[in-house]
Amino acid sequence: MTRGAPEVNLVQIAHRVLRENGFDPDMPQGIERSIPRGEPTAGAEDLRDLPWSSIDNHDSKDLDQVEYAEALPDGSIRMRIGIADVDAFVPRGSPIDRYAWSNTLTLYTGVHIFPMLPEELSTDRTSLLEDQDRLAMITEMVIRKDGSLDDTATRIYPARVRNHAKLIYENVGAWLEGNGPAPESKTIAAQLAMHDEVAQRMRRRRYELGALDFETIEARPVTKDGKIVDLVVTHKNRARELVEDLMIAANGATARYLESRGYSSIRRIVRAPKRWDRIVEIAGTLGFKLPELPNAAALSDFLAERRTKDPTRFADLSLTVVKLLGPGEYVLQRSTEPDVGHFGLAVEDYAHSTAPNRRYPDLITQRLLKAAARKDPQPYSDEELLALAAHCTLRENGARKVERTMRKVAAATLLSSRIGDEFDAVVTGASPKGTYARLFRPPAEGRVVRGERGLDVGDKIRVKLVDTEPTRGFIDFITV
Image: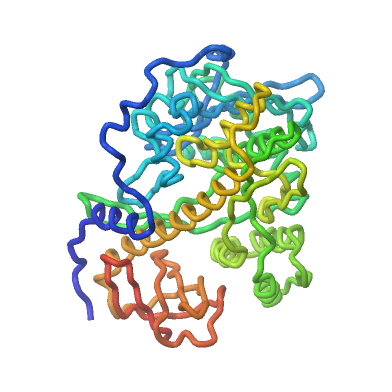
């Protein structure tokens, strides 16, 4: 049986899904009137002449970071990460701050973006746009030859910056991988080469310490005239890894900066996986023996081996392991208490700080960093940080449900004309609440409604599509 794809209003569905998960999709009218008109440049260093650049998606307008590097005589590299100074325009307790607190993050549904901040800020005055003077908080780090950071050299301070080149992931990635032309500006090209050298140094060191290297499949819908026409996957490339490595370093440096000055903070953590036994079992079926207790270094070795031996299926294995590791969370970290750490990154100190236009925890961290840099009292009490951490975790869990539901809405819409077709799939979830599988092509996820008994995460199966309900994002399979 087949049927044509139904007519659905995807933006209307996105609004409904946000509300069902506790979000407010509609920014209050007139909220922009609370934006300060001037720019508080007092005390900000003037670094506009440095050749700052950014790397982002082609259509991104909410630019949070710019980078600049400088070689030092001993072979170390001084790296400056400029982060949009959102706090300068969003005072704590202001109407915009209260709305940002409510949702805690920008929601990307694939069919519409629901920003955390008014677009006058996130895509303009607090966006580090090309050829525009902007305020930023600088995280200055020194990276040694072995990829370690000299924390004694870390500085955090406000500055005025100017993005001299908005670069695109795909173009920079192709050049770094030897498959595309260099940037037109030789100065920017030299900067990017140094940024890449820093990233490679730090990446090698993180892997030595047990950081996990994933290649996950995240499909996003492609729309044309308001209709879903395809699902596409964004793949990693060297430029995406470069930015990822620099942001991991900046997030770690800011966490240690606050701790060393006696300030509490909100940390981003991933605990040791509860389903380690299943990861051990999967590795065993592939001829690799993992220890009985969670061990990030051993898991890193296993993933590295599988990437080399079976690169075409590595993304599917990555997805399975990510599901079994479980989600991250935000927690209060007092400077005097032991660090919980981030299992996936193999780091003990990690605080989100690099995307204040899009994540509320980063705005909180920015306010803490400003206070620490000025040696002011901690702007949030530990009790307030504890409550904020719990609230941000709850909202992030809700955001994952929103994004997952909207991916299913898009996939169900796309697959509605293929009822009765059979597909290869991998099991992505197995619990008393239900068993779920993701198709290899197109990368759509649905529920296994018959034949699911005995299945577990990571199992490869053959399924038949038996029903879809696009407005709810329901996709039903049976095993064959």
